[in-house]
Length: 93
Image 1 (cartoon, rainbow, N blue to C red):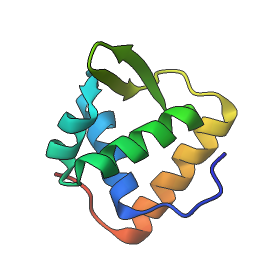
Image 2: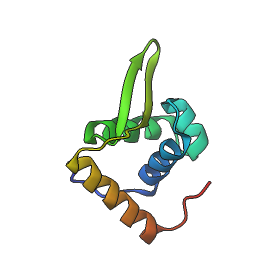
Image 3: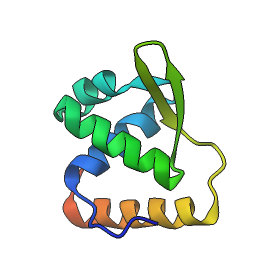
């Protein structure tokens, strides 16, 4: 599990990928969530390392999607994201 605090940008990245259901590039995540490209890459990589996102290396970069079956650590982290989302505010875009 990650030891850092959850930011509003991380919540935006998570919500964008969760709502999409499709494979997205970091650039697509950035455009849809309203964060910078490097911020989207950073959070997508972190969420895949935590086990929340699936990642597929493809020519020219990576694609990300929400995992359908989460391990216990990833489930706990998603619960933390959901709690932070309720505290920080509305992220429906």
